[in-house]
Length: 165
Image (cartoon, rainbow, N blue to C red; front, side, top):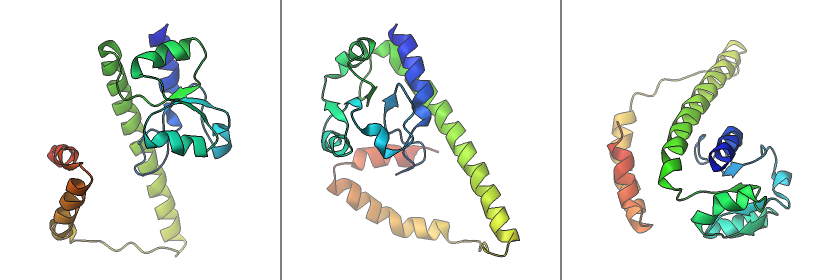
């Protein structure tokens, strides 16, 4: 039952914030979230600062322990959840689904962006200017990013991100 529910929730994963990155999930929902009003009364599980964020949007937030999320969803006590830790047997499925959904989202976003940019160029509303200083800019920005990451305790996360090729 839990695996089937997770599949349904993953299918609704298309409902995600476009910030801070296009594939950053807002959560895992039984039904697609298309507007802020959809949060009103939504039985949502999260923790930390997200409790205040989702409460502010009108959700009925419940800070259940991670191990109680799936059983609570099975019993209809939750409509949505933010998962930090899943049982080992579900982690691989979520990682795979996340990678596939991320790749699909980036492909859709890129193709739609490109189509819109081409249309704007043809209409004379946009002129693209190549930027050749990316490497130089990165050298200037990297120390700032590192200092900020250290300040907020995310230096290990930044190191992992920078290690991705």
